Image (cartoon, rainbow, N blue to C red; front, top):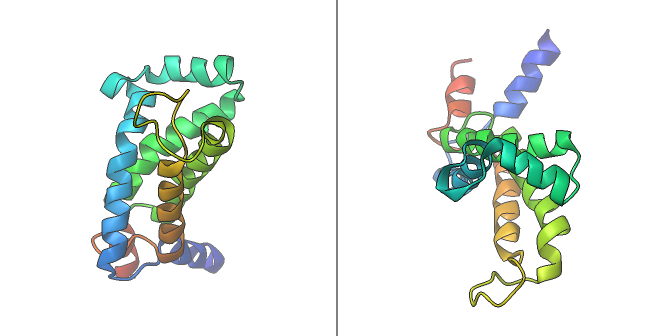
Length: 154
């Protein structure tokens, strides 16, 4: 039982760092609409069924990984915004960005499609999101996070 408590203490551990807080909340806010598109169909998205179909039938992602991507973007963004399980949420978001880069965006190139003349979007956004996620995995959620509240009560 002590090992389990120690695991949770390490997973949730953070400091009162405002920079981590800003990074966490901003990454969560930026990722939330993408997750809401995939799960709920908000912001012009296709919703759960449409997104699962696109992932599995169009680009050939196994259903379990498609499901994990939707969960990571939607619930991971909420975890980041609130600071609940920050490291887990950041890992999920970071992995989605890495896989998206390698499977879809790499062939387009570095730059986003600002001029509308590319066949898709480049991966510069994904690199920034991955870097933010890595920092949060290392530092934790910072000030004003649920993680901090849970560990401070101990």
